[in-house]
Image (tube, rainbow, N blue to C red):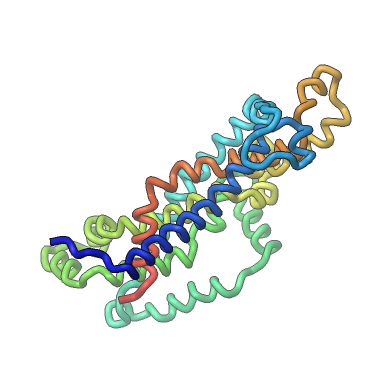
Length: 296
């Protein structure tokens, strides 16, 4: 028998829907505004006449970005960085979180190692020491310079080890009785039941690698090795300098382009892959944040 909702319950549901709809619009409207500007003419964009619908519809900004070989080359580098970086980072997080999730009786030096990793959250060596380390390890101008320096994120380790601690000890004890070692317990028992936390940490790592741009400028000497965000961040400067030395034909082709339309186009294209991936990981992301961040 269905229970008839009370008046206060109906008011709460309506209020909740209105608030969540407003929050959703706050997240969607800025991207619609960016898309509208990027698809508008140079005159309308510079005059501030664009709101949520393009004015003087033009694909010029996207044609300029997509028609360049450098764009697709940097896109390939970014994809390689995300795949390699996420794989290496997740592997290191698993190997670090598993022993730290043990009690002090099982892992005698656990407290010392925990403080060692916690220290890196509050204190960093700085930009110059980091560059020296990368240079002395001969990683300069290679994709590994974008992956290895930040491969082990301690905050992700904290999320993962707290999730590991929430797993019933009976599962590990049963596996130990059956003769399973730590390696098998980690890969056959802990990881399969940790999918929400893995999805959460994986999404953090993917977004971090995809959005990073400064380390590409810092560690890479060859522009052809730039990831997408680094390439896009240098595009406006290159375009401004190019405008002073282009031919009549090139200038005519770029007449509907401006810094504003090109910048909004690059922001939208840079965010689009993450917006496509996130809906598929959302349910795991929410579960991972609520379960993996609380110690039981």
